[in-house]
Image (cartoon, rainbow, N blue to C red; front, side, top):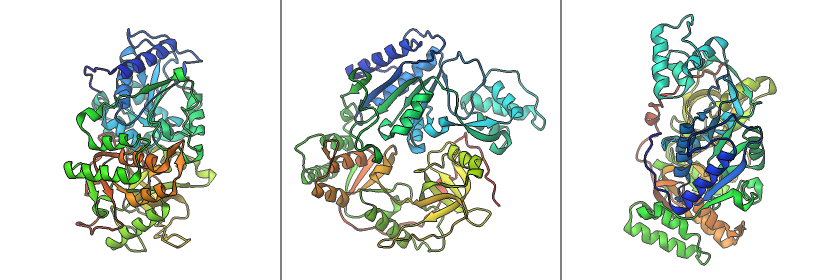
Length: 509
C-alpha cells in the first residue's frame, strides 16, 4: 500500500479514534507507534458500519497501514513463521475470494476467512527458505536449488510478500513444498473483516475464537445471510461498539449509481418512482443504462443479477442456447459457480487443498477446458491469488420445469458446479463487477408481493445490493429479452495471471 495524506470526515475521524482507543487497550498504539506483547483476552469485537460510499474501505486501509507502521506483522494465510508468540499480528479477511480480490485491487492485502481457518503445512526442507525470506533465518542451502533460484525467490518476496509466489519464482510447484492443510488451533491477534454483513453466526463464533480483537466492517443496508432471519452479526453489539459512518463521500463525485442506491432509503419511495429515477439518470449519464434486453456478451464474466431461481434458470439456459452449447459438454469460457466439494473423509487433505486454493462454495470460476482424465476440468477461480486449478468435476445445469438437472459430464466425486451466467442477488453480495445487469422484472414481483426484511421492503434491499455491485456501469434490464452474442465464448482474457500465481497440482487418476 502506498501512503498518502488522508483527510477524514467527522464521522470517519470519530470511528478512527474509537478503534485506536480499542487497539490501545489491546496493547497497540497506532498514534505513537508503541506496542506490547498480546494479551490473551484481547479487546473484543467492534464494528464499523456504513452504507456504500461512506468510506469504510478507506478507513480499513488506513488502519491497516497504521498497524503495520506500529510494528504489527501481516498474516496472509500462506505461511506463518515460528517466531516467538510475543509478536503482534494483523489479518485482513473477507468472506469470499471475490470480496478479498476487490480489497487487494484497492491496495489492501486481504485473504479469505477460509484461508485463515485452514493453514498450509510446509515440507521442513522448504520451510527453511520461508523462514529466511521472512527474515528469521540464514540463507539456506537446498539440494536441487541454485543460488540463482534463491536470488529469484528473494527478489520476488522483496516486492510481493507471498511465500508461495516466491517459491514459485524459484522454480518450485506447490506440491513440492506444501504437504497438506490443517485446521488452525492457535489463536491469532487482530482481525479486520470486510463485508461483515455476509457473516453467519457460525463463522462469527469461529472468528471470535481465533481473534481476541476483531474489527468488523459492514453495510447494514445489505441482505443478511439467508439463515439469519434478517439479522446481521453486528446487530447485537452494544451501541458503544458500533461506530457508524453516515456521510456518503462518493456522492460528491457525482456517482449516479450511488445516488440511486441511497435514494432507496426514502421510506416514501415506491417501485415505479424508483424506475422513473433510473430512466432519468440513463438519459443524462451513460453510466446508467435503461436496458431493453439482457446483453449476453456480458454474462460470461458478469452474471445477470436476479431474485427468483426460476428466472436464473431460464436465463442460464437461454445463454447456452444462443452460444450453441452442447448438452454433452461445456464450451471454454462458460462461467460456473462452485456448489460444494463432494469427497469422502479419506480425501480430507484433497478437500482442504482445493478449498484453500479458493474453490469453496459460492466461488465463481471459468471453465477452461477438459483435464487430462475423464471428468476433470481445468478452471480459473475468479479472485483467487492462485487461480489455475484442475479438478474432478460434477457439473449440473438446471432446466426450466424439470426436476433433474442436465449433467454434461461428471466424475465419480469431486467439486460440484452450477452454471454462473446468472446468479441470485443474495449470492452476489461481496462481489463487484465493472458492469452489472439487474433483471428488474424480478424486483417488480418482489415489490408487488409486499414482502419486508428487517423492517424494510424487500425489493429495496434487493435493489440496493444489486446496484451497488456495479463499479462503473449499471444496466437496469426492463424486458425479458436476450440480445444475440457478438462473439464466441473464449478464454483469452484468462491467460495473464497475477505475479504470485503458482501451480498447485491435483492428482488425476
